[in-house]
Length: 539
Image 1 (cartoon, helix red, strand yellow):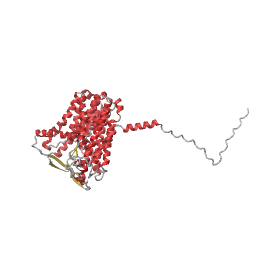
Image 2: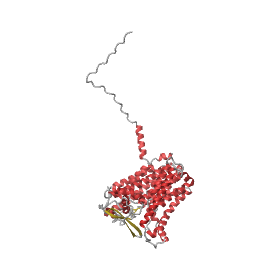
Image 3: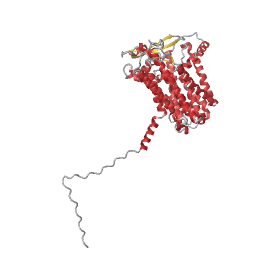
Image 4: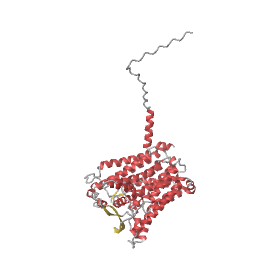
């Protein structure tokens, strides 16, 4: 057998030869167009969520009020700012107190150790307050950082609102601290309203429910949200509590997780509502009573089986107890003799009743220190939308639901009378429409939910789509009118309602900036009502 021939050796590589290049890894192919489209759709889905749009929209609108309103022009804002600054510094025990009777109403002033510059807040608007002068005469915020006793008429108010709002005063310098407190208030209130929109958007036909929440943003409510005043959080917490409670009561077929989210919303909104002003506990209890009435015993028993609802009940009880204890403590700070012993219940009831029209108009808006009345068109627009919702609620609601709507309407007039009859001999008659916001705002919320629950599936598609969007646009135009009216009031005084000149006072950054910010917020709120409508209607 022949031996195999040896294989020839490969030729030797020459010295210094360049080693062969390793093959390059292929470049990844560009993503197909459908992948980019999918990413775009996911991004748009996240950014287009109603609660996020509502958060941005409400915050932009409140920010517009925060900067376009001269400092200290919200009702009692100097006292609320001092209270917030003191609370953020842990000052819960006052160093001084005094009583004062002015214009037929008693105030108790409590003093706290603060930088002396906070004594100058009231002077920033006192020269044009109630005098229809321009804001150009306002004083500047002080610079004295030495410690002094600074008085506030809000010293006995619950600290739940004032602590987070006062935090910017700890590190921001000068007047920036005051604007920082306004922005903190705007963010807090916008978050509560956005949470309410998120709950309303969970309904299968969310146009009417979201409209009900957006309609709660009256010019007065949003003006208070963008300034430092606990009435702002009282109103926005009430909107969240009403939205969550009525959703629990009315929705017989909740989607997975909705009971939990609604219970969390009611726990947060109800606890904060109880811990704002003296009527907060009563307002929070009213929301729970309305839930029980509308839901009925069988639905309440079904809800009670959820762990989230059980935790919610515990949180509301603890919040109510905390509010009760604070109210008992605050009573010791302001105890005084009867300042108006000659006021009789009959006389008080008659006077408050005949002023009911003013109080109801103030719910929509009477800005500043009640010296900036809204243009007639703004009030008419808000009454038209509110009237539409209330009439629809009466028309579609069952007897228990209609009874709650009727109670809300009657209570709007009755609660001020009852509250003033009980307190007039001690404090005098000093009711304002903003004190009833937490009650009145339950009406549009309940009406919007009733429309979705009772007739939503039976409405023509065009009506289901267009009416909430059109109503929101009307409310946005009404808000623009309120903003313009307030702008001219402070730009050149209250005697030239329509002109934009002469410009005697401008906010930081100028008027154009805040016009754009405010208008952008309104556009985003309209988008919050309009977004995802087709998918929701087809479900």
